[in-house]
Structure formats: structure tokens, C-alpha cells
Amino acid sequence: MTTGRIVPIGSDRQLFVDDFWIDQANGITRLLHEPERREIALGPEHPWEAGGLSYLTTFADAGRIRGWYRADPSVNDSDHNSVTCYAESDDGIHWTKPEVGLIEIAGTKTNNVVWTDPGLNLAPFRDDNPQALPDERYKAFLRIEKILYALASPDGLDWKLMREEPVLTDHPFDTLNRPFWDSWRSEYVAYCRGVAGVGSGDFFDGVRWIRRATSDDFLHWSPLEDIDCGDTPWEHFYTNSCIQYDRAPGTYLMFPSRFVHERAPDPDWTYDTGVSDVVFMSSRDGLRFDRSFLEAFVRPGLDFGNWHDRGLYMEVGLLHTGDGEMSLYGMENSHLPTQSIRRFTLRTDGFVSARAGYAGGELTTRAFTCTGSQLELNYSTSAVGSVRAELQEADGAPIPGFALDQSPERYGDEINGVLQWEGSGDLGRLAGRPIRLRLVLKDADIYAFRFA
Image (cartoon, rainbow, N blue to C red):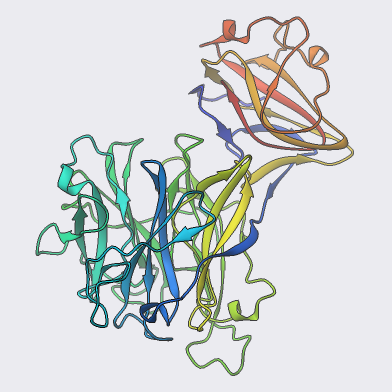
């Protein structure tokens, strides 16, 4: 049993996206789960969308789901004449494209376009900074040529430059650059495309990488700094799609598009060489990202339209769209007439699980303090599988009333299953006391735990 700092978790949910919580383990594997492809959420249907849709940013806002995406008027238009469009949904599954009547396209304002030249690649967010002005409740970055400008809007539809001067000039920014208000750190943060390794400015001999900057006012930013992925291989990353995961405060998730430039599965493809997939990373501070999983989070799949350069991107945003279901969105079929935005689903909290097979296994967490009065587990077992739990002192000694032999076998499949001990009484009496959690599994997965 290792020693170290006692981690205060209050009643916050904890995930197994990295190995932070696993102090000791036997017969346990952490498993990355791939999302399931669902229907096309948004596809091209208007003349200004003939070249396809990409770069969706979506979030729940005032009782509805709102989305902003890039549309191109022709295939392979590559940043020329691109527009930003608006969409809405009641459930994250069925989408509409309201006629907002703001910008004239092809002689009419009967369209859903909210921004056109100059610039492109908006990634809007609702600014929940208590100091934000009502006329600047929504903000976004805008790329003009190679540099970034700040936009603001009172409603997410009518956008204006916050100032004439750019806010970030250390290019390249040739992707969707993702700003947001970090509610956990009370500052603005931006994740942008960059270059790591040899070379500077545009891509030379380094790798396409992700950089981070922070700001107090959205106009003046710290120097861009490469994210740190530790001792893992350098790989080309384009988009990042970073989010704060709302069900686990303090957990940042990122879904970069990984670009393998030297491969060319389609010998007849003329746009550029390369093939892409999507990877999964997590962070506890927003700068150092865990890459325990080097395999793909989303593969190109059976659709050969995804097997070419930049053929697959994960978009920005995660929605809770059903009982036990989360939805993410991805762009597929890049540079084809079928370039669209597809919905993907995962089990709630279901990015990574700690799994034991039929032979069984167990893990013990590092020491922590909590404030909750009951243990909630997001777990899944087979018909013969089970989960049992023990609470221990910081030194590993079982706590009377919460020992393993007082934990009945729990089996089933629950997102917020409450685990109880025989005759233990209220777990709340342990609030603020350094403890550990031991989980004993058989043919089971644990996705998250929480002292609620």
C-alpha cells in the first residue's frame, strides 16, 4: 500500500480514464470503449452546404440543444467561401436548421447562416463568467488568414468582432480552435492547433500538435504552450475537441484527430495523402494529458469514404440524450459530397472501465476524503458476474461495518447503483476521514464511483 497525499473528493464522481485512482490491482485491466455509430445528425441539403458539413460545436442552452457548424458551398473548397450555420434540437438526435434571416446568401436571407467572410471556423461557447456582459454572453474565435480574432454575441446568432486587432497570432491555426470559460478554474482557456518539435510557425519538420493558452478577459492571452502527454510517441494531431466532463468535476477530455500522413489507402485519391482516426486523452489540470490508450477511440470503420486524409474528426460537445446514453458527434467522409456529421453514442461515463474477467480481480484506490453518505457505482456485470466493495482505513485496514465479508454480491447493470453493506448504518459518519475503496470484481466493469 503506497503512501501519498490524501485526495479530497467531496461528493464528486470519479472516473477510471487514467490510472490515478488505482493504487493496487490484481487481475484488473483498464479498457477503452469505442462509441457506437448512429444516424447522420446533420447532412448537406442546401446550396451553401453542397461541399459538406464539419466542425460542429454543440451544447445544451436554456432548455434546447444548440449547434453551430461549418458549411462549404462546393467539394474541396478548402477554406474559400465557407460559412458558419446554426442548428437546433430538442433531443440531440433530431435536428432542424432554423431560418435566422441575418445574412444574404444567393440573393436571399432565408437561410440558417450566421457568419460568412471575413474568416471561418467558429467554435462558439456560452460564457458563464459572472463578469461577462449581456451583449457578449456568447463568444468564439474566428480565423482570418492565419491568425485568430475574438467574436461576441448576445444570442449566439448575431456576431461582431470584439476588437479590430487579433488576439492570438502565433500560427498555425488551420483547424477548429477551441476556447471556453473554464468554470473550475475561473478563467478562459483555449486549445489551438500548433507545431511541436523542429520548426516554428507553419508545419515544417515537427508534428502537428495542440497548444493551450489562458486569459482573464478573452482579449489578452498567455503565450501558447504545448500540452504535455508525457513519455508517449509524437503523433500528428489536428482537431482537439476538448471539453469539461460535466459529471466528473475536474476531468478534462480531449478527442484529437490523429493524422497518419504517409499512408494512402485509396490510390486514386488526389486531395492529399494520409488517413485519420480519433484518439482519447484525459487531464486533471488541463495541460498534462494522459495517453494511456494509444489505440484509436474511433476507427475509420467499414465506410471507405473515411479512409483518406482528414476523413474523420470528432466534433465539440457531449450531450446526455437518453437513459444511460451520451451522444458525441463526428465529421465523416471529408472532401466528398457525402461529408456529414454523424451521431455516436456511449454509455454514460462509459469512456473507460476497470474490468475483471471470469477469474476475477480487484483494485484498491489511493486514500481520499469524501462527504457523501452512500456509495454509488456505475457498473455492469454478466449473469455470473459480481461486484463487492470494502472501505478501508488509509493504512489498508478494513473499517468495521464496511468490510468485504459484509458486502453482498451486487450484479446487474446500473449507472448510479447504490452499494450497501449488511448492518453498516450511515456511511456519512466517515465524512472527512481518510479512507480507501477496495473493489472486488468478477466478469464485471466499473466505470465510475461517487460518494453521493
